[in-house]
Structures are given as structure tokens and as C-alpha cells.
Length: 100
Image (cartoon, rainbow, N blue to C red; front, side, top):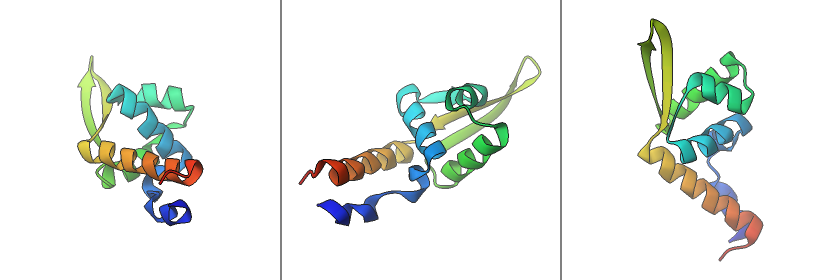
């Protein structure tokens, strides 16, 4: 496969912060905003921008609610997000591993 797999690299996922979000959610399924911010060492604004991009692509779902009168934002990976992430990993694997 090789260089032909470059076209399979999803630009939405490929950014460092968005890739980190997808890696974390692929294992955790759901995380709250503060948890992601801490794990990824992101600023609130930076994380918000990247989550919005993933949400617009349909890769994550964002649920906003309140807990003890405080805002609570929960982020979950969607079925489409899981598929896209799997395809992304396959494409990267083909590029660096020379899979046929």
C-alpha cells in the first residue's frame, strides 16, 4: 500500500490534540471535560476548539448538564468516531508497517 494510504489519513483526527482525545476516548468511551483537559494538558479554549471539530465530524457526542449546580460536560466517542479512528489506525499502520 504505502504512500497511497496518505489519502486515508483523516485530517480531523490527525491533529495532535484531536488524536489524543480519540485515543483517550477509544479506551474510556466517555470522559468529562476536566478529565480530558488534565490528561491532555490542554487549556480550556484549546480543548473546546478541538472537541467542536470532532463533534462537527460526528466523531464525538458532547452532553452538557449540571451536577451540584456546576456545569458538567461529558464527551463520548460515537460509533462513527470509533470506525473513523479504526480506519485511521489502519492507514497509519500501513504507512509505517508496510502492511499489504
